[in-house]
Length: 139
Image (cartoon, rainbow, N blue to C red; front, side, top):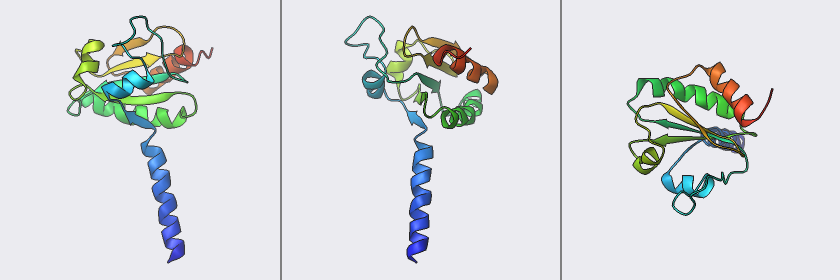
C-alpha cells in the first residue's frame, strides 16, 4: 500500500511540473514578471530569461491548434524560456495595452531589446526558429 501511495505521489508531482510549463498570465503577473507599464514608460523587461506570451480565447479554433504546440515548446525550452498564456476575454487590460484585436497573437520578449508581436497561427518550426534566433540569439 505504501508503495502504491508513493507511486501515486510521484505521478502527481510530475503532473504538477508539466502543468506549470505554460503559466496563465494575469495582468498583475505581467506587471510583476514582465513589465509594469503603469509605473514605467520606457520598455525594460524584468524577467530572468526570455518569455513567450500566447494571447488567446477559449472559443478560437486557431488558438486551440496553437495550444499543444506551445505546450510542447514549453517542455522543450523549459530551462531557457518562460511560456505564458493570456486569455484576452479575461485579461482585457493586457489585450488593450498590446492592442490585441485578432487572435491568436504571440508576444516574443527577449531579455534585451524590444518585444515582437506576431498575429496568426504559425507552424511549430517557425515558432521554434523565432525562439532560437530572436530570443536565444542562436545562429
